[in-house]
Amino acid sequence: MASPLKVCIVGSGNWGSAIARIIGGNARSLERFATTVKMWVFEENVNGRKLSDIINTEHENVKYLPGFKLPENVVAVPTLSDAAEGADLLVFVVPHQFIRNLCDQLVGCVSARAEESHSSGEKMGLDVSVLMGANIANEVAAEKFCETTIGSKVLENGLLFKELLQTPNFRITVVDDADTVELCGALKNIVAVGAGICDGLSCGDNTKAAVIRLGLMEMIAFAKLFSKDADAVSSATFLESCGVADLITTCYGGRNRRVAEAFAKTGKSIEELEKEMLNGQKLQGPATSTEVYHILQQKGLVDKSVATSSSIAFLSLNLWLCFSVHIEGCFLFPTSNFSFL
Image (cartoon, rainbow, N blue to C red; front, side):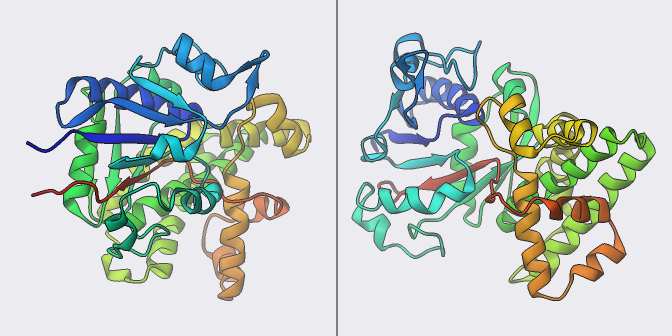
């Protein structure tokens, strides 16, 4: 019988801690996975104590997910290489701009066979699945029912992560359109800022609904236009939780909408509002809009985008060109320490 698969969670913020509650619970009850789950924590001091020590003694991330206990088998580790040593499955829940540097640090921590594999074009040469959906972290932590989507080019890997992550209140659908799933997770944040500006300007529900609908149309157009294989982009993927459901949730309940509304009402800078409202977290929409704008500019498509649909989402956000991309979601890496046979 194969040895249980070791899981490492890379990241421990609001969403990372919510995912740790799920993974820790499933790892305890499923024989396929090792009971102990290591979670890499970016070390910081909270009220004079190290965050990793607080998590390991009180089993709670008091800064990013207060009020929710973590399973005792989830162990906070402040050194990335120690957390990932010998791991069979890597679950990345960190801002997207940090992925490249973290992967550089992980070289040598996974099996040699994994480092030599080139089954995908990712940084570590590993196949990558992506989890995105209508999943506000605090609601997931509170075990309120929700759905999510795993996009995976290798079906066996997607199903493996479904087994690791699914619960009766966290229902998962696996699709093979991984690139589209990931794009949905990025682009919906732009539309959410547009929706927040609508709220801040008291434009009304009709206008906000139009921004959401037109934003979804632009998300679909963007994915088809810039995909390596436009025929592989399925419109059905946008009807999964990663698409329309996540877009609706983000445009009504997400941090991008909330801060954009405050921006329109108060005139304060984004930096000020982030400090006041987000407890150390950062927005995704302004940064992603910057990246999208540069892509459209390089392709000579800025005027086309503005002329066709959700100009609120794109034009309003060109003011904010000072942030880096942050895609909220999970990047799921199976290393090659195990076999599906």
